Length: 334
Image (tube, rainbow, N blue to C red; front, side):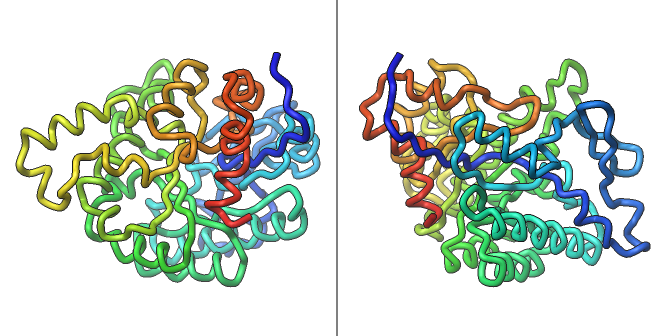
């Protein structure tokens, strides 16, 4: 078993819920405010009649989180909210308040435990101008390192022209955009066997990336930093199919002059793919400079032992270091 001395790690994909943040919510918004419902060693996020989870204590307890990441060998972790609380479906004033209090709470934790955490903001992307305002506040005043957004906003994918001002400002701020699936396209048609998560999430990630490429986002904003969850879903595996479409369909060339594979080096990918062969393929397909350690900590879909999986790939130490921390450090400026 390969060993590496003084392993550094930056986990770019983890989720947190800070229940205290919502204790100050105004009464008029209390109906949609998420609550933590604890049961033995598990807990759920409850919003109205909907429940999400279960989650372990490390999801909502900083003390438990610090103990867990130390045990798992995670030196630094990006904190982002769970996609169940993006709140894209709410009235904009309510969504603005929920975004603000979550960003304030995450940044407070990240600033207090700066040796262990950095923060990713959430923004009310159903209103692009308000999302821009909150992103500016989060990056410039709260010192968060980027923004987590969903793969779609109420069914509208990220390549839609309406989102261009948001990406333009993100490029100007040098903020990393972390794209996480939410409300996947298949969720209304497949409800059994956890398929909305197991299949729907990677499907929606693929749709989001493709829509951004075909919508010309990466051409218009060449310095935009985008990282996608779950190894990019099906995108790296099906890039040949997208290139074939570019060759035979004129409508694909409306906003781009290059085949989709041209843009693969413009996108960063986390390592949450679970299978060692898939991880090896991802690295070979997109390049070691574009892959960053991610865990999906501490959800039931966490890619456990991923650090050991990366080390045991047998790659040169220089490449292993890139994936474990150097790429994230470079991209995020930490």
